[in-house]
Length: 80
View 1: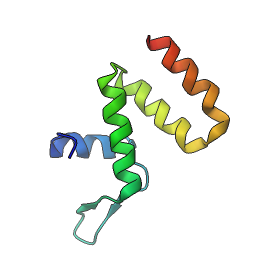
View 2: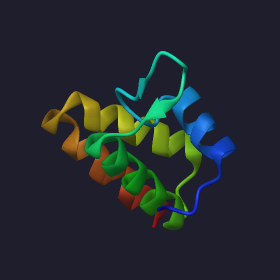
View 3: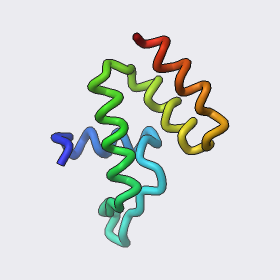
């Protein structure tokens, strides 16, 4: 769907870039619409040239809610 390899998906999961990712009893990742939205956001930010450490911070700010909008905007302005 996003052209990501299994190893990249595992790495993104390990780094906490896919919030609330569920694994079944066999340990297989089961993606829901929220997870897919997060992956789409990560892929978009990666395409924009944002570094992975900044993407991780951005995703943490998203999880914190609208009070971080100014921080997110500042990060976008910084990478221009």
